[in-house]
Amino acid sequence: MFKHILIPTDGTRFSLKAVTTAVKLAAGLHAKVTALHVLPATTYDFVGDIVSTRLLTPREAREREQKAAKTVFKNLERAAAAARVKAGGLCVTSDDVYGSIIAQAKKNRCDLIVMASHGRRGLSGLLLGSETHKVLTHSKIPVLVCR
Image (cartoon, rainbow, N blue to C red; front, side, top):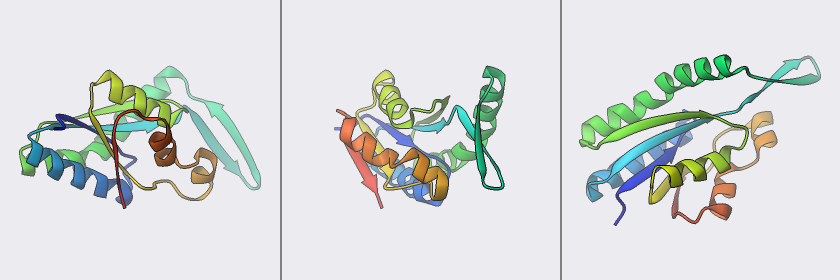
């Protein structure tokens, strides 16, 4: 049925449930999993009541990707090893989070996307909107949403 599952994750406890679910599903289907962490290319600095933005340099983006990957993917590595599932991780920088999720799913020939029903909260959630909803709306690849 499904042979390659993409798991968009931001490292939150909500996305950890998606990781656990996807690994269990992959074990039963003898599929492989790939976790994807999309970092925004624009940073938001808060100074009192003022919000300013700045773009990251390519070097800063790479450094952030490497640091985030170590943190975010350790849960996947543990779960996959325990379930004897082949696993990998991708970290990309883009302000188009849902577009990056769909593009990486296509690029890596994933046939299922497993993701949390929601992730970021507060101002970052408001600024980004529901990435899960956008993936559901635009993906031609099946999406399993974990609550």
